[in-house]
Amino acid sequence: MHQSIRNLMTTCATKPLRLRSLIIALAIAVMSAPAIADDALETKRAGEGATTLILVHGFGMTNEVWTEFMERNTTEFTMIAPTLRGFGGTPAPSAAPAIDGSTPLIDAAVADVAAIAKENAGDALIVVGQGSLGGFIAARVGIDHPDIVTGVVAVDAYLPAMPIGSSVIEGADRLEAVQQFGGVLEQVSNSQWISFREGIQNAEEMISDPARVAEIEAMMSDAPRDVLQTYLLEMMVTDLRDDMGRLKAPLLCIFAWPGSMTSEMAETKKLCMTMLGRSTKAQIVTAVGSRQLIMFDRAEGFDNSIKTFAEGGTVDVVMQ
Image (cartoon, rainbow, N blue to C red; front, side, top):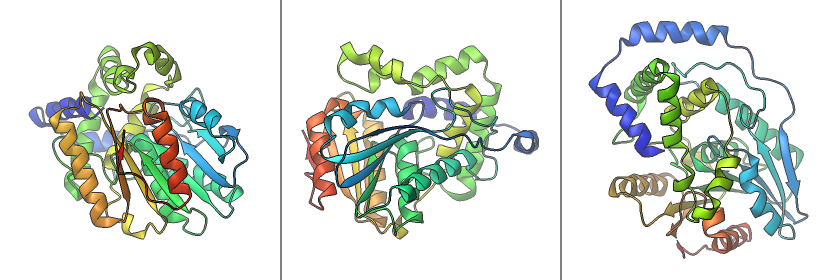
């Protein structure tokens, strides 16, 4: 995903947009967007363990991505996996890009996951987020509800902020870059959008076993273009660096570290690790040789890491 975003951001830099006109146009779109749907979330439930896990999928996926993990751990955990609004054929608003730093779709997802947490609160409740979208949601629920959440896990997430272009810029510069990027996305044709989406949702980059690529592709959500674009822009505008210090619950961050990873991506992940180290007491784990879906590529190591973390132990820093 990171490389495809970088390529389009380069287009932004070489072909600057008239931001004032863009902002006015997007503001009209925002005002005409309907409210978030009130329909109940589609959820999977499994297990009877003492610790409850809320499993949040990532961008462009559904709760199907957690099915195998849930099947493997029915005696260890009580598990709840929602499909976020707009994914997997579920209803979502006709959303417009974030032009003022707001994140209405992510806010709604945080509220939904927080509601699940409140309904299932007990002695131990951990929110696990896959990818940057899932990671942002898990972290925000943990920050906002320290009385309920006893742990947060981020699985290959660009936490606490996604890189934009070649760096993790902030403030007004970050918002302006996202506005430009959103303008480029609005202008691309449907065929160009499909190519871009295939770049950021490439199953071959998610799992090592080529025999399972088609299976992973089947898990991907066929969400509408406007929903995917809005989630993506909201992820890009999200910056939790100033908020992570308020996270009271223990944090476990597991980064995929595939052998095919570019030096640029490695540096980006190292930057995220450094930022996390400055703002939290996170346990940081690298899954050596694993691609993005670590729960598939390193099933045993992943399960053991989650169990150790849930028990309050220290997780091995390298997952082989």
